[in-house]
Image 1: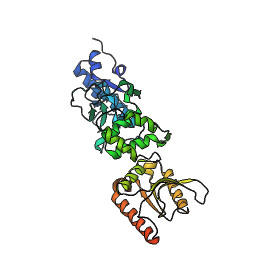
Image 2: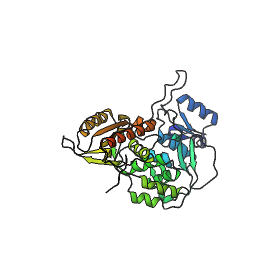
Image 3: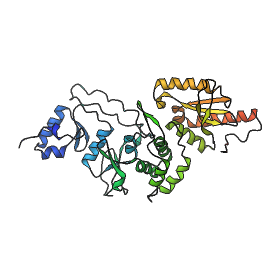
Image 4: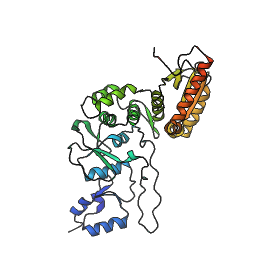
Length: 349
């Protein structure tokens, strides 16, 4: 039986072993060829063609090709939609792997093993079929109407409202709210500025379906702030909220340079501003330098008597220190002005 060229059997950079066998390739000869030509095994039964970067799309394509009834969802769908989460931000590509040993066939670079447990691939099984072993993949067995499924990057994926509703229902809270606030606003993803992906009303409609976790998810909507500019800002606000601190967010001020600017957080009565900065989460080193210039202008605003600055590293890895310092600054401000209400309180007009 004549053998079909393997490259003609590739779809989306992925070769299914079953297709090659159906095309006349003997199993032993097929695997010898794959190894000698540098194909890369992505999933059981799915290999990436030589030279193909095994990125998120290829990994998802491999898994979906093996089990075509699965739909990309939850965190994996968020990444395809360029929605930030606390797992793996879509704007930061994985580093290339180390070069292969000289004695081994060359293979394309592929992402390092993720250090965060949420970096596995996530799918929904609309058919609610029995769970089966699937390395590196989490399958959610929940109802999924076809009208909530679209095609993106050659993959069947949940639409944006359903993706966010899934994240809210599944939790945890911080990851879900980071994703929702990312989708509600303009965000810089890589070198491009992405527009908002959803309106609050559409999210509320998506949460009308009575699935497990929906009551808790609706409760979390009260914590949303669509003005948040980054995951670090979202988490900083949530940490302060959990500590009983209620600053105003994205407060408009007018520094001496005449430009309209916005404070990340302001305790107005105390004159305490809090800024979250750091090029690792705001994009580039140029953006970091702009943050510094912005800081110098903010210190001269009449509403601001003191400023605390925190990096994304501080927010994510040293939140207790941040809260302790904010409380200390509020107490110091209250001591200077005895008429100030209890530190950190804010009653909207």
